[in-house]
Image (cartoon, rainbow, N blue to C red; front, top):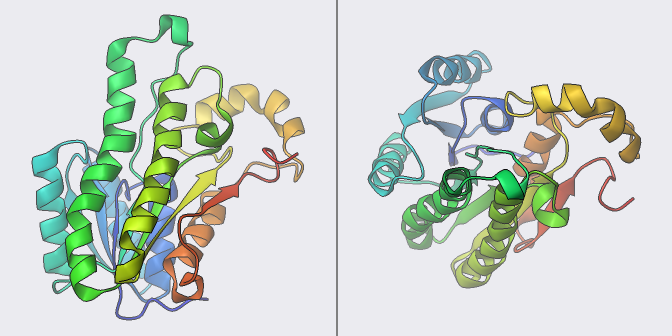
Length: 250
């Protein structure tokens, strides 16, 4: 297991699902983890408790990553918790507002692009300065196979996640000279609070498309994020790691 001793991580959307699993995975390797959440305080407290039960150290930083003032405060609080450092940033916060394009409202489009794409831009921009100053950083953005291959009924989500891939590759080029890497993971179908209902309805049609024959787990994704956030991946930047059981490449 990669060691994150002495490292400080900020995980957006860290209260549930992939974010919570990532916070636990990084903490189990020795990282101090700032868990960001927007609205579910109880879930954030539960995530913090789980990290501490596992022997890790965590702080909760509330804020909406699509709101610039909130982001400034979230990063400031994370830096204070980390003694002036943020070594690892995981941009995981995201929402869906699914519908066929012909029925999709402008509000549904804007809500997803604002949180899923603009949020990653705002948090990364705020965290870049301390990373540049310390000449070290690992940024991992949580995209999706929808951003790689598209998905009917998710034009807004697919556009945001595809945009996140382009953003990842650009940040990687801009930050490489400061020893800051930026990569993305693109999970396939992973049961979370966000997707449970959809996957339950569609499992008979989705599972035959997955060569490994099962849905992914949040731990599958967290392990990949941890690798990209580790020093073992120090020569990897600007890449997209697809975690989908072979679905897209099948």
